Image (cartoon, rainbow, N blue to C red):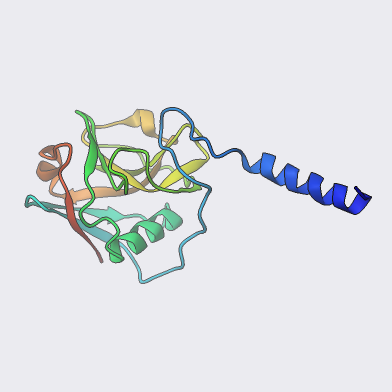
Length: 182
């Protein structure tokens, strides 16, 4: 093997090692390599989630605090990505949906986008796995009570302004009919 071939092989090996293996970490959200930032679309300041079983809730979006997260959420919502997906996690303090696989393991990887917004009742955040530098690109959640333990640990990108009673009634398996972005 000549020196040029050896260096090319070595460089390829280094890139493969730096990018990590394909095995998903245990626990958390299994995702793929980080995906690129979304292309900017029309302004997004409010989302209204309509449930298939009836009822809806609305939350403000905070592009000033999490611009890439809001842009990605708005882009996916406008493309009907979330339509018919389920809420796969429902606990006394949180509801979570947006997983294309429906079990908490789907979605891609994107860089985290932390900010100073507190996780108070009705705060909307993005799921992540064990690596705090990487967020899931599709799974999102709403906290059903103050959850300050999430502050600076998860990306907060909105706050519920109407329909908290609907959120409190969500059950595992309830489906998102649509998400309208304004």
